[in-house]
Length: 408
Image (cartoon, rainbow, N blue to C red; front, top):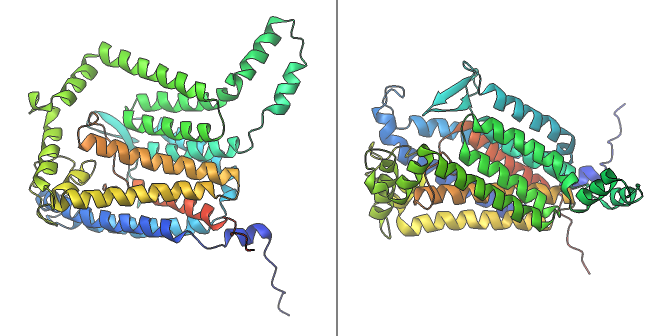
């Protein structure tokens, strides 16, 4: 005899709601344009490389496979009830920290351009940067803890202590200014920053700090801590730059790349040539000149320069508009999320995406010094694209549980 069909619980019904179509459409548009630009930007490099057997579509084919499998991961994640991420967050964060340690071990980590940021490929899994997983881990864990943030009972208990002792008065003071609450989050960020310092990976460190700060800020941490922390980091960065010859030279090359045409300024110069030669309408899709081995990382970190060269100012503006609409829609989903956990998740992921786009465009246009940071959905890379699409799947999962508007 057939078993009776079980009724869905209220939580299961929420998880099976409709996804946010505008957000999904914008994600797929950016992914599609990104695939086209990877094919165009990488064709010359792939043709001249022996590794690709001189196949101009080598990188494009691989990126297409990454995109298809990434889309499947995004779909599966969007079907997951995001409440399950609460208990998973601690394991994801722990795994990311473990991988950040493993990447520093010779034989496991891959060194490239004097940086050890990648873990060697394992079977069908390509080499990847543990920092990509660390970004997600920080957002998930911070959101899971801070969504239950409520300090009022703790404050009452502390005020009943014997305030005559120095220890009691100090504890009450540190609790009232919010210092005690920040200790676990600060320690997590400190461990990750120290590990990434040994890689080194400055841009990835900045992104993780920004993502963590975004979740902390939205959860209600006092503004003064962000002003103080930002000022401290700025002062520390200035001290490091002025006291290190290597960093001082990097700043000089950023301020005047034409004074270092054969050193660190070369990539910036070629990037600006590509952007300037595109003009208003561009040279046309596939007609870039800089991709013919003039511009390094043309299908990676500097792919936006090829976008400007081939599609022109108008094409580049449309790409930026799509990113802006995606980011705004992400914040809209956060504002309408069913609970605080979902809102914090979406804010963290959306801020991470927004800041990564901002930094990449800033580097390509010489607004910031050159750092190794990719453009989401555009830059070539398998695991980075997978994680970005999983992040979009998390946002879509949150959108499924947005309460329906009340009808009169």
